[in-house]
Image 1 (spheres, rainbow, N blue to C red):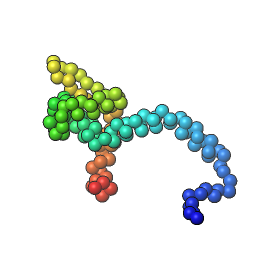
Image 2: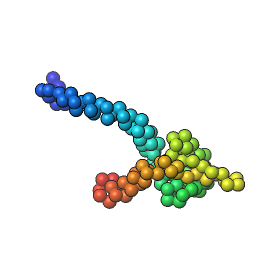
Image 3: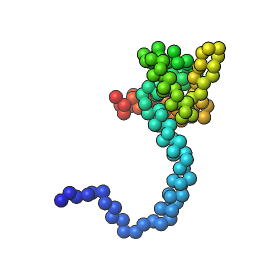
Image 4: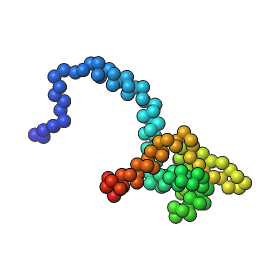
Length: 127
C-alpha cells in the first residue's frame, strides 16, 4: 500500500487567515490572469528573443527580425501576431515598412524578466 506523505494534519483551522487569503487572491484575479498570459506569450524562446530585441533596439521590422534570428519573415510574422494580440507590442507604418515596438504598459514586467535572465545565468541557476 502506497503512503501519501502530503496529508494535511492540522488540528484547527485559522478561519480569519483563510478568509483574508481568499479575499486577497480574489482581488488579484485579473492581475494574476494577465501575468499568466504574459508568461505564456514570452515563454516561447523566439518570442522572448523578439521582445528582448525590441527592448534593446526600440523598434524593428519583420525583415530585420527574420535576418537577426535566422528565420523566415512568415515565421516571425506569426510570432509578432501573437505578441500583438497579447497586447505586448504594437506597430507603426512608415512608408512601406512596418516597425514593431514594445507597448509602454508591458515594459515594467518585461524589463524585470530581461534583468532576471543574465542575473540568474551568472548565479548558476540557468545553464
